[in-house]
Figure 1 (cartoon, rainbow, N blue to C red):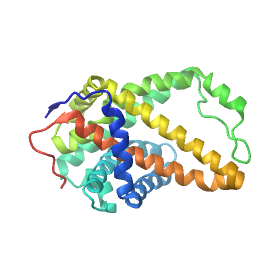
Figure 2 (figure 1 turned 90 degrees about the vertical axis):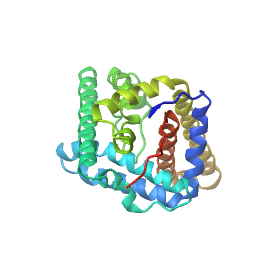
Figure 3 (figure 1 turned 30 degrees about the vertical axis):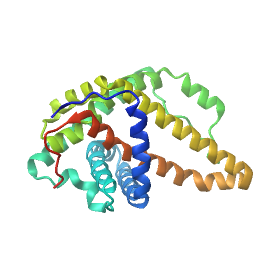
Figure 4 (figure 1 turned 180 degrees about the vertical axis):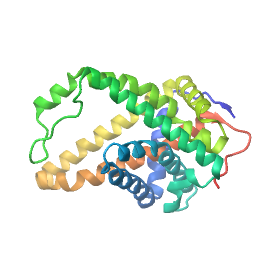
Length: 259
C-alpha cells in the first residue's frame, strides 16, 4: 500500500460517484445509515457512558458504510449485516477497531472540552415550534467556542478519515493509521477541499429547491414533511462517497477482501 496523489478535480468526481452509487441502492444505503443513527440515538439516552459508546462506534459504522458502498457499486444490495463489518474480521481486527473507536471518542471529547473553555454553550437554542431565532444564530456564529471546535476538529477528521479502512482492510495499527490518514488527506488537500465544497454546494442547492417547492405547493407543512427525508438521504449519500476518497488515495498490489 502506498499513497496515491490525485488531481484536485477528483474531489468533484468523488461527490458524483457517491451520489450515483447511492441511487443504485437508495433504500439499502439510506436504511443502513438510518440504522446507525437510530443506534446512536438509543445509546445517547444513557447519560455520558452512552454518548461515549456512540462516539466510539463511529469508525466502525464508517467502515460498515464503506463496505456497503462497495456492495452497491457492484450492483448488490447491501444487507444489514454489512454495517457490522468491522466486527466480523476476527479478534485482532475487532480489537484494533475498538481501540480506534476509543481513540476517536477521546479526541472528540478533548475537542469539546477545550472548546467549552472558550464558550460552554455551542449549540443554538430552539424556540417552541421548531424554529431557531435569528438572534440565536447570530450569537452562535459570534461564539468563539464554535470556531475553536471547528479548528480543532479539522485535524481530527483528517486523522480518522481513512483510518477505519487502513486498520481493517490493510492491517495497519490504529496509531499508524491516524498518521497515514492525516498525510493522505494533506497530500490530496486540493481534492479534499473541492470534495468538501462540492458537498456544501449539493446541500445548499437541495435546500434551495426544497424551499422553492414548499413555497409553490404547500408552505411550511410540506417543508416539515420533506426536510427529514431529504436530510437523511443527503447524509447517507455523503457517507456513500467516503469510500471513493479512500479507494483513490491509496494504491495496493491486491484489492482488499471483505470477510
